[in-house]
Image (cartoon, rainbow over all chains, first blue to last red; front, side, top):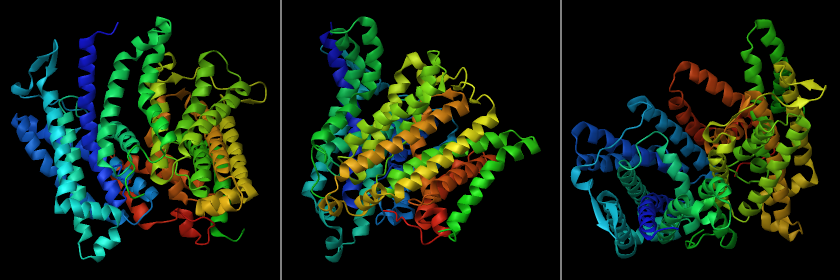
Length: 307
Length: 316
């Protein structure tokens, strides 16, 4: 039998994971929707953000100082990457973009190995975040609650930014017709750089927040990047709203699948078979979901207005 | 045709590859044979990718999955005590074909960047599937107790025999690709790449053609996988990791996408470069990563395109 409090705990974990996915997906999908750029190195920004925070935290002993240092550092790094490399790729095909950003991933992974060594870094939490709140008999770590709150705040901020501000208007206009916006006298390059910086900042935030939960390692960006790609494909590439919905869907399904699929299989399979099949199917679950969604809606759940 | 520099490069390359074991024996450096064999196996995989990517415009970022399935077919058979290559290899090719058929049917419904991402995600799904299969070694993979057996025909535990088998298969695959590309089938595929609506209007069921090409490429990659398993005496999920798919794309682009010999040149250059750079510094990707960016930015059409401006394909 599945008991209620365990179910609640895993649901909570799923939502929290969904938030991390959303922070990454929002930046990636915005960059894609507006600049038509497929940036695989988004995962590298996540990793660099996590490393910056981990290193500063280790040196100063303050996690908050780590956050404060990491976000601007990664934002600047993102802007440098945009200006030096990515800007030249906007007019190119997706294959060129994928390949060049793949090269960037190799570069950053190796750079991290050179500077901070092959071993990962554990990030210690300050005491006030290391407690737990009890809800429905389930102890919920305060830190994970904080992640959810921060994530929702970011989602609200993005919503307001995109729909209510002049910058957001330019972003939306840039997404529907870049040339026209440029012709109307807006420095579209500046908008691009700004959006890319925003995406880099969000990726760094995700990396910083993920640090204390998973350890900070080389290649951490790639593992989550693939799931983020699944999120934005399901949500509809270019749609922040789609990314928001899909991120929770994927987060919850992935975590719940890993936790409960063997129990579910035991309903109609012998225990042995269920325990063999469950982990295999659980790791494939989100991809099966993606394939199903794309089969019925090849443009994702919330297709953005531009192709 | 014969006067084109690219063609001369290919012929020279085949001759050189044929001579590698001789040189290896003469200089008593067995590493050359080993290295050359690895180049040729990856060249087969890259050839198959070029078929769909270069000629069909289908940018698959999950091609390593089929290599992995081919390798696992051999590994799993051997694990259960089936050593006959007459069973293992057809299974490898058939297994890849079935998976390519399913994945192709799903992913070919999508276009452009969606196609890149869905092939990537599906391949990664296979990766995680094999990681979670504890029965077949999970993360660690399976050691191959002995190479595939082909009765009295050929002894694959002899590394030189294996080398020449790979060589013959590479030439065969090259020949097949060449026939395919220049056939009516190949013309339809290339037509659908440049203008699918036009091909549809001409009455060609383009989806069926593209799917067929996708499956053929998968089968060829499966064969490369079976060879790779015999080459390394080992199979593990890492063979289908998405970075391996990335490597294959790099090989195709490095040599020149949409030129028949490009992938072979690309595979050879890629592995040689990797070897040289790894000799220079432990942190060789620090050089290789930016090199890749530079290739994308400045060397369009790859090495063969650089040699031969009149190559038949265009990149898109």
